[in-house]
Length: 233
Image (cartoon, rainbow, N blue to C red; front, side, top):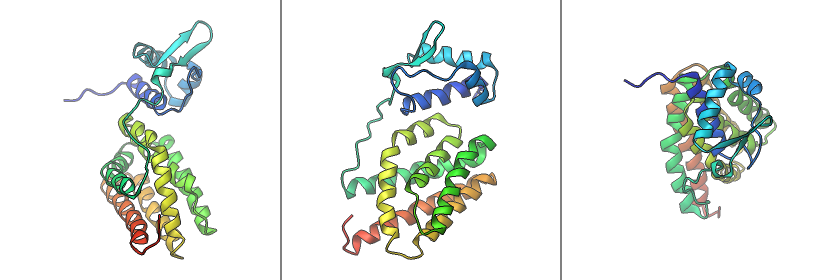
């Protein structure tokens, strides 16, 4: 039986994921214990325990009277991902996303709370507003997918997706070009995102998994149908 995680475990894992994903710069000071306790809705002793473990792992260091700072060795822990350089890379990346993101969406549906759902809702709201004006918000689209990974409360998903932030953005940029060929493309992809969002908000892991898989397949098909039609990507 897997032991239940403590609050310190949760805070440690989330901070670890943030540091390794590059959310903090080298030697950047972390928020104060008070601010972290407020952010994570825990007590300061819980935050202190999480920070102690981060220090032991070599991800942060302390300066007396100044707080905790990020070590350079902790930033962007290399995961072996090379930049997308060609169509074959993009196709392979879609294969990876199809394996990972449906599972991340299912976890988000199962585990999210109101605070974790807020970034997903915010990104979807931006996408909806833009689509109604026939604009594709590539930044909001990327944020939507990253926020879902974080909402699953699993540091491995969050860290991996954060490390792939530029890859996801590149894939979305190519997909955005393909949408311009279809007058209904923006509303179609918005409907796909809405299905994912509603399944997560309603706490339905099976539907969230299926909706994310369907969205990624549709995105891949739109992009590579464009390729097959003779238009270069």
